[in-house]
Length: 397
Image (tube, helix red, strand yellow):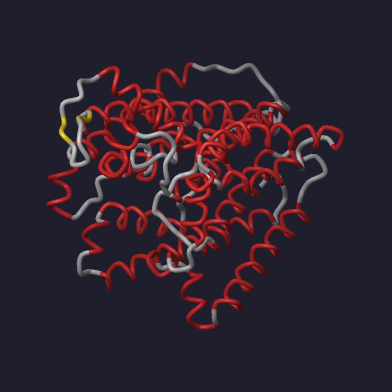
């Protein structure tokens, strides 16, 4: 078997014969869950998806307004605005709206979103295939069972818009390992413009860039971020700032049952924030101390370090949404092979249980939801701890 980081001729046949059909099946299942959400909602309180939420709350504004306040960053606004324009041109505007005027149907909105996010899912699958074939060399079939057919990929690919930053992060890692600094940091900047979390990978990926090119890499990252944000900041500064202000609201921690909220009840807000910050900085220092001399020659270390940093970001974040686990999925697969072995599998099972029956748990079953979230958080803590142990081993383990 070639050593990690060694290029070899790539046979794309397995992708076209196995991985792509499996990915399309997973996306089809995800689409059916979204399309037939009403009977599922009646049966078990299944949450329709953020595609539905976007349509119910924002489609009229996407059609009739410019840049407006919403709890999503400017990069994601640009994406859904483009999808709205596509809907207006492809489908008749037949649905009357309470604000006046006509709107496209939810079914049309779902179809356009599903095609776009499905393509993102296929892109993630292709990047994972290339990462495995060129650098990680997992056992035959591992990507199929440990990634494409996991409940998290099937459920979350069309659940919300996180497939976009996941694609950017996965493609950025592929470009970085290929020594394409410009492509890697452009993709990371675009992903950060859509959802903020890819920014935590930027300092780590800089370790893989020669010192003389690090300033250039930072400029490409900031350039992509500025291109997505500055036009909207100029159009409507208040709307641009709104999602970040909304996310920072400390009351959000009670709503989502985060560790930060629990610690704040025990220790007070200030000590809780200090504890979480100390944990995060300690783990970052650990990653830096364990960094190999040439990180790009140790792809598995890079995947594990990415998994740790993103997992730590989720763990210490004041807001938690079930789809956040989708962020971990590529790095967990590449860094550990089977990401859901042992205690960490509790994270995925509890996470899916919460996401699938979200409206059920919120309608008088809060005690059960609290237990599910406890299992979920313990699973996340176990995954972070397991990753720390892996990083403490030899780079080739």
